[in-house]
Image (cartoon, rainbow, N blue to C red; front, side):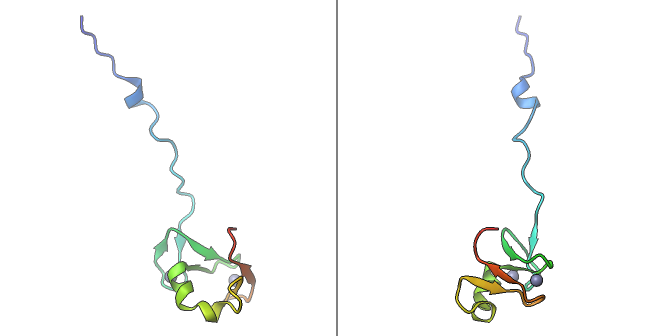
Length: 78
Ligand SMILES: [Zn+2]
Ligand SMILES: [Zn+2]
């Protein structure tokens, strides 16, 4: 009388939804990145490229300027 039931733990829900809604692709190096700073115009830049172009992108390290549309963007999380 060993009746094995399939454990519902294994069958049912896995680890839920992995948030995959957003993939960043750096506009500068064109690689997919876990994070990029983004502009509403669609421009995005990864931290590597940002570092490389840092003083071309920002004049104070607090905000950066989108090279595509000129929008001023903050470095905060947004
Ligand atoms: Zn990049
Ligand atoms: Zn822009």
